[in-house]
Length: 217
Image 1 (tube, rainbow, N blue to C red):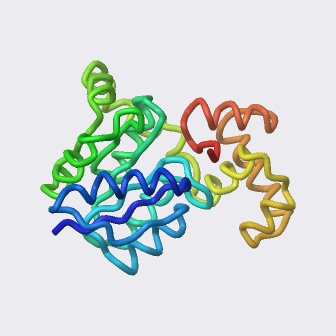
Image 2 (cartoon, rainbow, N blue to C red; image 1 turned 30 degrees about the vertical axis):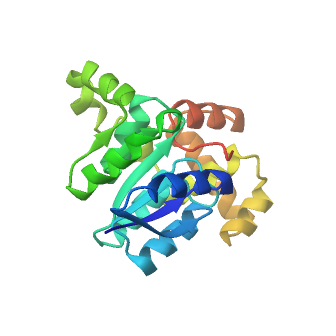
């Protein structure tokens, strides 16, 4: 039996995924999470075979949660669900250690195929993403390097960036992350320097264009 945890901030989506997976007698859904931080906690406690992560979640998004789950050094395989069909985002997720990247618009039997592939230690991509990556095969090595903006940012900077993009003030960010407003301002300045922009509007534009963080749905 393949033990699965589902993480998505929309209850109705989790219900739909659970119903789909529980039709397969090889799969058991052992937990649900409404945000990335809860997903990490469930994985740590339950150590499922597979965790399915929505890429855009509160507290920790799918990429951040993937990074934290990988740091646990357990055998749980990660599959990402996303509305974004951009190759760079998929490649970034795979570099973080995910075993699958599926578009939400196509999730049906594909999810079962992805789970079985991950269980075998194989990577599964939605056909649209797979085609895009193959069409750009010669660019993969260059794009995997330090030119990726996400590789320049620390985990804390990504947390601050996500909150900025989701319209939180310095004081709100300080309260959420339990740091001082002065430290938030320092992170904001570092972000602008690293991403080559001069204001918050520029930060938001680059963050969303490059898929560094995601708007909470």
